[in-house]
Length: 191
Image (cartoon, rainbow, N blue to C red):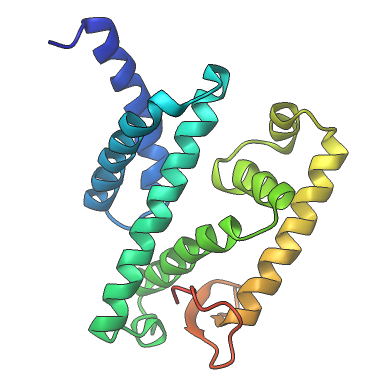
């Protein structure tokens, strides 16, 4: 039997984790699957957690990994189905949102491949939604140092995406299509 205090702790964690995951995946069912996977990974890894003060970042790192793994699995199925994002993105707003969603999912993978200081800076500010000041405080660096890391990380991320994919934008700057370049340097692209 699970004690009420422990049950409340898991529910509180789920209430914070579910929106984090839901913003990064296309459907509610996918978010449910990923949250369950995160809890399983936490149960397996909890005995190996060395610093209890790092529990929150550890949980979110597990969540990011589970999201990336889920998106890799989706990308494999999408290739098998012959899906082409550029065809799907023609005209309707729903299809434009789908194109943006797929590209946003790929961005998580590309951020994970960045060098360490830039990966953490973009993960905290762009993916987790912290302000640059909050992220700087969390990492114990100056705000100007965080701003530099975010700017350099964004530049590296953009370069990586452009090397891998051709991203079509409409007049408003919205993503309308994305397809891998034949000579793309990063084979893990999900476009």
